[in-house]
Image 1 (cartoon, rainbow, N blue to C red):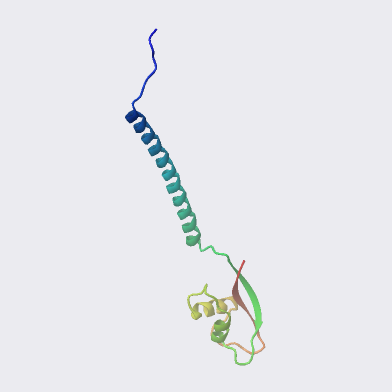
Image 2 (image 1 turned 90 degrees about the horizontal axis):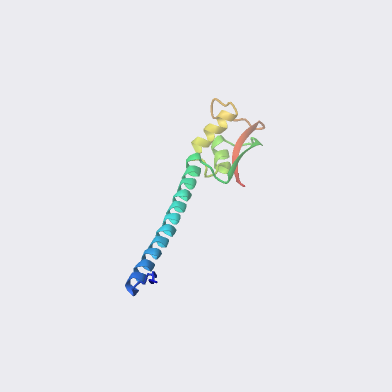
Length: 116
């Protein structure tokens, strides 16, 4: 009867282990790259849609003596607006104002953001 066992030299065993380790490292690296790509796309989609943990609300305020749209903007505007003029334009649109005149005692609706 003939011995059919296969014998490997130390060099062949070392090469096989090296190839196996290399495949394992390749699989781990591939999974890591796919995970990073998934995280990037998820993060970018939120930024593109403007999602944040800030929630927009509206409140009514009474105009006081000496108030102007500019002073209201300065005291109520948050970082979601790029300028005071942008905030004022939104307030004017919401309250159907055609100019910058506001009257003491009148109520107007203003937007504000809170963190949820």
